[in-house]
Length: 394
Image (tube, rainbow, N blue to C red; front, side):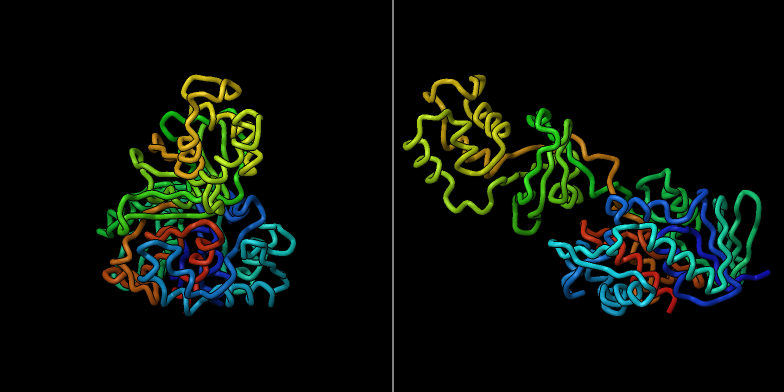
């Protein structure tokens, strides 16, 4: 049998493709035992499926790739994806950050919908079918697994990146694509926590700042700033602000944190508070700026060297305290390898971004995270999975 389509990868983008295209001579191959495993853990199991607002605002959320994929995004937008879900019985809502979730807060509901639609469209779904090679043969393409060789007129690569290998995204497909002469850019795990050199906040694990500003870069051209929640863990910094900037902060990069971005003149406020209070500096800092007391103690301790936070007021620099609150500078010791998405993949130069077809390999398409496209947190990566799958299926 010659299939019309074979999709390699049963994650979000592969299932979105199969759920949209009716064809009873089509096959979806998934290398792991289950379909959509990574989708099930997205958004903490709640599935932040996309983001609200204008699709035009999405472009900047994909870094340099945004301009290349905007046609695809505009044609198959967040509103289209939301309508598709709601037309099929999955109501959605936007949280206070405009992230879109199913009302049920169950990723399983979205996965079940995609699988049921794919089957209704006539697709055969095979799990435990890991692809080992692809061979171009005239007008058809051979897809080789450990047990079978399948033949198709079109093959869609939807195998994801290198994040969460246990879900099937182990990066093995990139070596197969390279063997075909397809350019694959350098791969990194991003949307990852950052471990700074001399990390001072390990004892504050679990404490979060709902609104912090993280900045990296020394010039206008290379400066990147994200304002979002920040979380201390026992060994690193995490939270959306950190995850988003991790794309631009490999080992050795310097970045800074402002924990109190809405305070207009923190030095003036601190001077006034110290003048009117006999409390220790940690209490003054915590009360004046509304930061956790334990955090304030560490800030004051860092500002006065080895002295305890409750020591004499003499020798403590208010300017140093304010500097640590508004411009706490670190150098990245390690960018975590447990990121949420892959930076790198099949180069966008290799494909037509209107159809996702490889320019020099007719009949082979690449969608989703297998491409060199990665977005910030907030539903942007699942939106691109959808947009690219729809572009390829049109």
